Image (cartoon, rainbow, N blue to C red; front, side):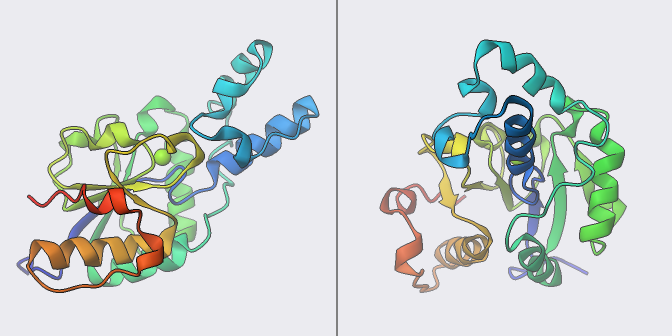
Amino acid sequence: MSRTYETLRIAVDMDEVLTDTLGKQLRLYNQRYGTSASHSDLYGNNLVDIAPEPHKEWLRSMLHDPGFFADLEPLPGALEGMERLCAQHDVFIASAATQFPNSFNEKIAWLKLYLPQIPLNRIIFCGDKSILNVDYLIDDSAYHFEGLRGVGLLFDAPHNQHQRDYFRVHGWPEVEAAIALHEARKNGVDYTAPEEIYEPEDLLKLNFK
Ligand SMILES: [Mg+2]
């Protein structure tokens, strides 16, 4: 079947887009050190950036521990949003899991459990996502948008709060609205985005190729 305007190719990141990876990091960190670090402490930073020097090595090693990626909670609305996206579009998972080779099996098992509609041949583990040929990439790490052929939608996360170069989506309901808005603008169709969910500077940065 040939692709139409309505059927888009969309790549979706896993950590901090589908899974609450930070939530688990915070929980384990606070348990270990008796701290109370929270999302609000992390504006523009990763947890490892604000942790005291003696804690950093343990924080970095946590992501290499067997089982770390196996039992992550889905982020609110992620499964429902993916259900709707998959029903209409060609959806791929694109995870830079190559940084954590032990995570491969755990990530595939997670996807089979929570998103069984994603076939194995649409799961891509790649360190450099600019190689993807997609209409949209939904990711919390802006560096993956550099050199990308499609449009990057920056999924809001504490660590990316200073990033202003890409269109930001605050959670899953906005993903679908942002894609609808971009497609409408690209095709010269009127579309009124829900005003309250878009930052004005983001609207100026729409990138229609
Ligand atoms: Mg991520």
